[in-house]
Image (cartoon, rainbow, N blue to C red; front, side, top):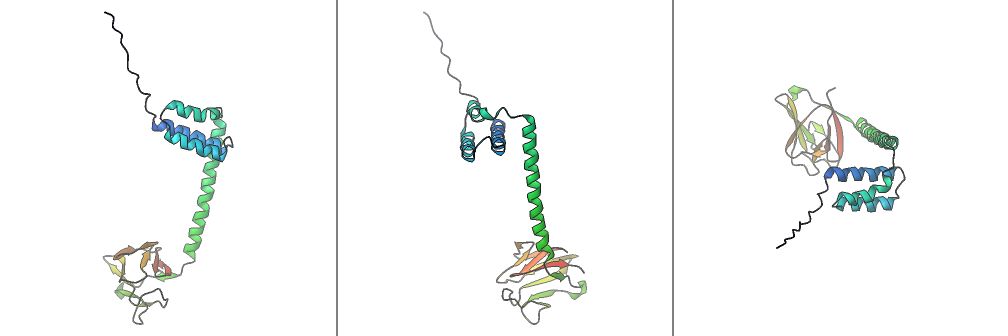
Length: 187
């Protein structure tokens, strides 16, 4: 009796994340160097993201393999330079906006609680229509300045984040009452 053995076909090994990332990087560099049109780049990226085998990725990047190390280094330098230039613009806009804010001087520690609002009895009276009558209070507690929202209609913010309850503030922080914004200053 002769028996024949048949071996089951083994599935192809799973595609690693590193292989997929490497292929995606090659596609990005190919597009940056002008070797791929925008539409071709987008289609190949979609195919690379759903690929299941290494061979599928190899087909997508076969025409990009001939790039030299110098081209890859040049592309990385270019992307780095563009990123740094873009970041400078964002920083300049933030600094410009921050410097134009009016200063709000922190009160003398012996003053106690500084009430902020439209009420004539407030220590800091703000007449803007988005400021509530009793908007907020600023007090020195355990050596820290604490800003507390008093249930204002249009809110109190510290560095762009809305205050619910109270928040610790420091010199240089940007604080807002309704649509009025100030930069805290010690002098």
